[in-house]
Length: 87
Image (cartoon, rainbow, N blue to C red; front, top):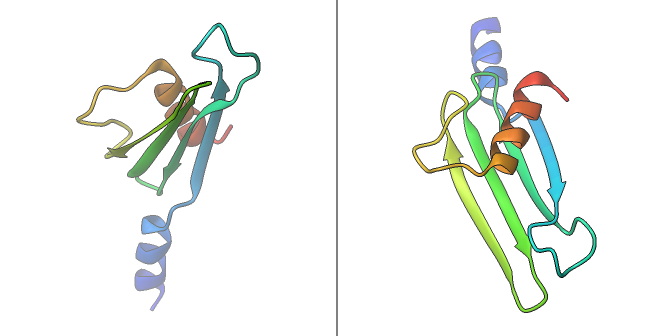
C-alpha cells in the first residue's frame, strides 16, 4: 500500500553529510572525516575517522532526531547539519 511504501521510504537512510578535516597539525591534508547518514526523521548514525601518522581511529555514534546521547565533535555536528539541510 501507499502508506507502507511511505513508511519504508521515511525509514530509509536518505540524507548524507560529509566533512573532511585535519585534527593533527603535524600531518598535511584533510585525511580525517565525519560522515552522517540519516533517514527522513533525522535518525541514523555518524562515523568519524581520525587519521594519524601512527594510527587511525574510527568512532560510530547513533543519531536520533538529529542529536546523540554521546558528545559530538564540531565536525560530527557539522556533518549532521549538512545531512539535515541537504548540503
